[in-house]
Amino acid sequence: MIQKFYAIKNKKNEIRVQSSSGGVFYELANLIIKDGGVVYGAIYDDNNDVIHYRATKKEELYKFFGSKYVQSNIGKSYENVLKDLKNNKKVLFSGTPCQINALKTITKELHNENLYLVDIVCHGAPQIRYFNDYKRYIENKYKSKIRNINMRYKNPKKYEKNIKKENISNKVISTHTLKLELDNGKVIEEMDLFNKYYQLFDYFMGTGCFKCPFSNLNRLSDITIGDFHTFKTNLGKFNDGNGVSLVIINSTKGDKLLEQLRDTFIIMEKEKEECLQPALSNPADKPKNYDEFYDDYQKYGFEYVVKEYGPKGLKYNIKKLLYRFKFYSIIRS
Image 1 (cartoon, helix red, strand yellow):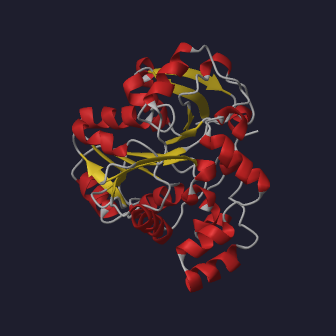
Image 2: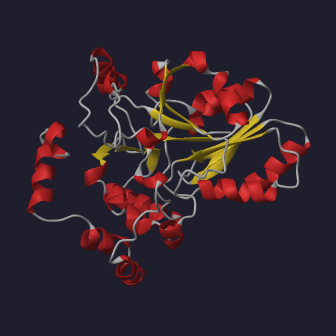
C-alpha cells in the first residue's frame, strides 16, 4: 500500500502529558490489550535499566510512557513473541528499526497476521555502558540513588498554560527536559542543552548507527511513530506546544489499527514532503573526533570526557546564565 502520513494528538490530556509526543503508542497498546493480546516495549526496571517488557494488562501500560534514549536489553522478548504467536495471541511489538528487523527475521517462517510492528523514528541509540556511567555520575555527585528517570518530562503547569493558548510560534523548537528524582528527595530538571547525557548523545552511539540502513522511508514496520518536527511545514494552530506525533502508516494492518482509534485522536493528514526530517533521510553524522573520544573514555573514564568534549565557550556560558534566570524563549536562538 501507499504510505500515509499524519500529525496526531491524543484527545486525552492525561495521556498526552505523560507521553513524549502526541500520545499515540499508549492507545495502540491499549487496543491490543483490550483484544486479549500482549504488548512489548521499552521500560525502566527497578534498577532504572532499560529493558524490553511484556505487558498483558492495561494497568502495566504506564511503564511504556516516555522515550528511553539508550539501547534496551531485549532479553528473551523475541523468544516470548514466538511463543505468543504460536499460541495465537495478538502481539504488538515496539522498538527501534533494527530491533524490528531482527524480530521479522526470527518470525519469518510463521503466519504472523497477529504480529503488529511499531518502530520509532530513531536518531541513533546510545550504548548501555554510557547510560550506566551517567547514572553513576549523578548518584556519586548527589550522594543518592536515582529513584525515577524521565527523559522527556512535560511540566504539568506549562502543559495547562499551553492549552489556553491558540498555538505557539512555528519558530519555537520544543526542548527535551530530563527529570531525575533521587532517593534523598532532590529533583533535577535539565534542558537538553545543559544535560551531560544529551550533550554527548552522538558520541555515545555505536558505530553501526552512523551507517544505519533504516534511516529512510523504507520501513519494515506496520506503523512508524516519532515527534512531528516542523522542518518542512507549519502546523499552525494544531501545534499547541504540548507534543504532536508523526505517524506513518506502512501497511494495511497498520492502517486498520489506526482506523479503530480515529475517535481517540485529533488527526491532520500530511504530505510525505512535509514529514521529512534528518532521521528519515540519512543516518546520524559521526562526530569528527569520535575515535579520539572513545580512546579518552577508555583511558580516563566518563567524567573526563564529559568535561573535555562537552560544550564550552562564551556563547554556551551566556546560555547557561539565561537558563538559570529562566529566559527560556531566547536560549534556542
